Image (tube, rainbow over all chains, first blue to last red; front, side, top):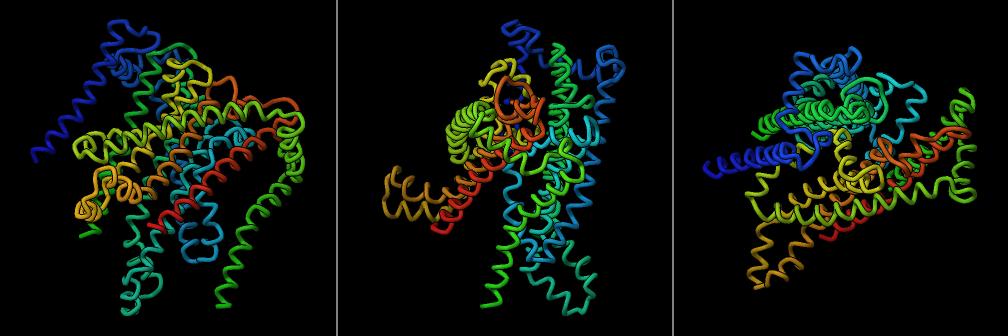
Length: 263
Length: 253
């Protein structure tokens, strides 16, 4: 218990110390204001842009950080939901038809090796610059993680005794699937969904950064090119906060889910 | 036995059929949409061949990308292994570093790219640093967990044989962590590659990612598809090689 406290304390000390160093470097003018804003001002700017909206309006020609945030948020949700709607059934299909799984396996495994973002210029060519292309990139990035984990999850249940129990209880195939396979595969499926959601976030924001006209990723890019360093750091901070928050919540949920399975 | 070898054959046929099917679909799409929207495979391959052999429009960008990737990845390997070793040996440092390492993994790192531009400028240095920044995390994570998970029994055996520390490393620690070390190095390569390409796409003066975004004029669709093909081939070649090594290593140990 005592060493756990020490660890938590050190973590926060490291975080606060790093932020403090950056603050000091920026405040003393070792690095110019046009390159690095003090950390405290990043928070202030974020607050003023996001909550009160007083800075952003003139800079972004009427659209606030909040508006860009909601656009990005919508693209992430959209791409993730489509990835789930397609990925879960395809994963189940690969589990039901082993031949198909064995044929596609080499391709699925090496999928994340390919720099998927290289496809973005092609996709923009077909769908134009906008929500459709960006959502498609998020989908493309997320779906394979969901497919692989779903298929693996169900295969793992096959190796256990649970399905035999269902058969000896003369459950119908549908009930075996719903009451036995699905719950038993949940940890794997959830791991896939977690990864998929994070990949959706990365796919969407990275695409916005490379080429788009709206969204948080675009905001960073645009304020960088417009030498609006303060707004750039505020938007970066917002993205980092969102990613860390989502990641921590999902990790905690996962730990709970696995914990229940282990018991 | 015959049934099994027949299904084996079927799978092999299926695996080779996938790229053939893709090329057929591509050809069909090109026929339906027209050469201007989607160039046919044949035309694309001839542009790709020209880029490598005849006029070499692809080679100088390819060279720059490979240099950036090589340097960035090497730094990621050296520092990643070192940090991973330290974190694996020291419980306290590991616990402190874990949330930072795992959370950085989830951040869309490309939005931090302007910081790299501030520090390293528009040239190749910023891409090298960005590739390094992408690749180092999986190497740290997998090295750390590999060292942490070495079975205590192995070390006890080493002690009962009175091995000196150097021998312990060479005979016990190194063979035990090698398979997951390889996985970490492979994932690190993939992420370094993505980092370099993303950096080039975002802001650069050369490289394949830059060529992807700046392709225009005659045959620009052919060029974009050619670059995607070249990138995919590099990625798949390196990964298949690593994957084969990983499987051999885990069989041995």
